[in-house]
Length: 248
Ligand code: UGY
Ligand code: MN
Image (tube, rainbow, N blue to C red; front, side, top):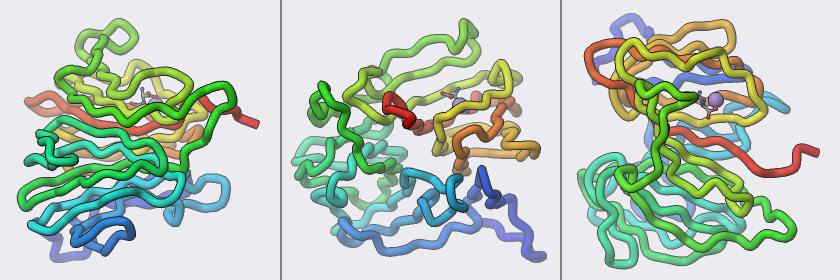
C-alpha cells in the first residue's frame, strides 16, 4: 500500500457517515474467531449517539488455522467471499458466494491463506408471527438481478430473500461508467458498503468523495447519498441495509 509522505488520507469519519480507505487499516483480534487477521471497518463505536451504526462490518484475511464456529449470542452473520475460497462444514464457498447464518447457529467456517471474506453482523430482531429463517448459502451469479428503477446500466442483485423473517438485506450493485444513482437518496435504513471493483464519486451528506475498489463506507439513517461510476471499468459495491422491522 502506497502511503502519503505528508500524512494525507481519503479516510473521513463524520457524525452520519464514514469513508474508510485501505491505507488506514489496522488488524485486530476478533472474538468468536481463531487466528483471524481482521479489520473492523464499521461498528457502533464509530458513531455519535443516535447516529451510531447498529451493525458491524469487518474483513478477514485467512491463514492456515483461521476459523470460526459461531457469532456472538443472538447475532446473525452474513459472510461473503471476496477472494479465494472458504470452507463451510467441509463444503467449498468460492469467491463471490456467501453464507447467511441465523442467530445462535453452529458450524465450522475455515478461511485459508489467500482468502478474504467480508462479514456483516447485527443482533437479530425476532418479529412476532415470523420464524427465524434457516441458514442459507448462495452466490452472486445465482442471485436475482434487476435493473435499478428501470436502468439496465445499474444492475442490482439481491442476495437474501426479501421477506419479513430477514431483518437485513445485502445487495450488490454494478454500474457501467457514467451511470449514477438516479437521485440523492435520503432514507431510514442505514448502509455498510464495500467497493468490490471500479471507482467513482460518492456523495455522503454534503461532501463528495472519490472512492475506489477496497474502500468501505458507512451511511447512517437519513444520510443523503448519491453515486456516479467513473473510469473505464464497471464499478460494483456490496452493501448492507436494515429492513422489515417496526420503527417504534
Ligand atoms: O438500497 C438502497 O438504498 C441503495 N439504492 N442505496 C445506495 O446504493 N446507496
Ligand atoms: Mn440507499
